[in-house]
Image 1 (tube, rainbow over the protein chains, first blue to last red):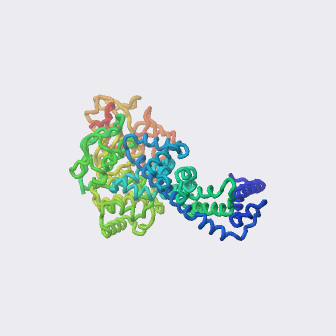
Image 2 (image 1 turned 45 degrees about the vertical axis):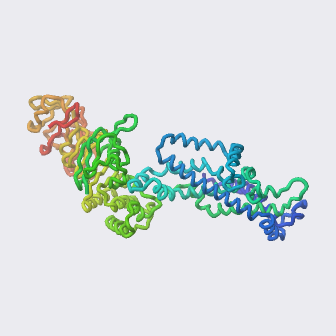
Image 3 (image 1 turned 180 degrees about the vertical axis):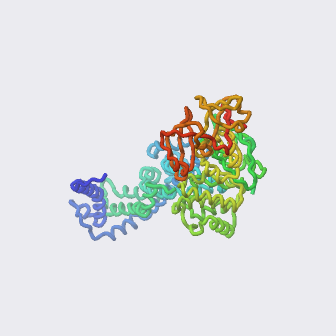
Length: 275
Length: 360
């Protein structure tokens, strides 16, 4: 695939630059809006040069608008979902791959079928269950229904299947119990996959909107994504767009940090497996 | 230090696929036994049953006179070296060797001492901090052996440990395994499909074919008195020439297409006379002489110190192995006529046409 056609290179770069502009421009507008006063944002056309109110706006968002506590709720939710999913998926994949028990394939397919049943599809019955268990407005209610995950189980299963049988046999001869083998051999070998999944699931958890919207009614349990929506008031009241935009940017920071910090492992986990 | 015994051991997989049809054998304390056979003959299955990685369908396996059929691999006090090494990729060489000891709750000093001693024997002392992927194939194989040694097990099991190495390294590692065994004297079971490994390493070898042990004996026994056509064809390179002949009561031996072979009467046992039989003669035991039967050379393979003549005598193809210097005197080209006879010093082999077993 090595072609020497300069005009093709130029064309490719132009297309890519357009793509970047398309993605980056809204972000830039968000940033600019978060540095101006509400009146300046409301003016038409809005100035595209950053204003002087950056510190002011962000302090207000974090303190009086309660974004600080929302970020905290979001963080707890995203972390619990990501870690919970990884823990459960690792163990269920371990069971499905390494143990022979009656109905093994049946259970695997049961797990697999839930891929077709994301929260959005089963939202009414799930809400009923969570409500009856008294988990409305709690972290358990926010996270538990989202933790069971077929995707992660499936991914770990595929990874475990590529681990050579001889490693299991060597461990058995070395005298390792199944859980010991899991802890000493499988977990360290899966760490890149775990990192990749953590990134994906963290963002998945962080971006949850519909489910928290349903089961949280108290202000102190709102994750930040809901917070943004609530700031955009309809009807007669005025939306403070500068504060809303500051909140949006704040809400973006943790996922971006997770991606940047785990990028090396993330890519490694998706691309190769160390065996 | 232990003995190992097989009592009518059989293995059948689900769906009644029998892979091992009953093996009886006794391995003496400190003996090095090689199980050799073509792929699919059940040799690896047999070893895995000893290791406890496969269940035994019927019969008993005894280690030190104790039936181990129901024991977990870890409880059998065996150590196994795998073909693809099976090292834990995320652990250092030291941790790989120490893992089994750690699980058995040996003390830190004890582990360090044992691993260091094994590393010294295997010349791994400078590599203890490396990861397996930073090692060469030969070094990895040594780590795998180190992992077996440190445990000081009753029985070593080697599952084709050299087949992933290149030819030169294989020869070197073969010698190392031999030295190691001489030094440790641990009862060993070694599976291979390579007859050279089997011949050089074994105290005794078990030649397996389709789940049946064809012959159990010392390498020289197996080589000089192969118990069946299969063994005759499997051990020795190039394989033994096997020719179907008829032998009359008075000792005249004729091939199927009527060529009379000149074989001294004292070389034809009574049991062979007056029937159709398969005559076996090793390529290196055929002499080129002027009185022998005529054959036409079809092809010559030059191996350096010796040459293989592929000749045709009537319907039968015959391979003759002779030192290069013999041919240097009288140059032979494909298409030439040569005369073949026995060298008279080595016994001929006779096998029953129906059963394939040796006839004495």
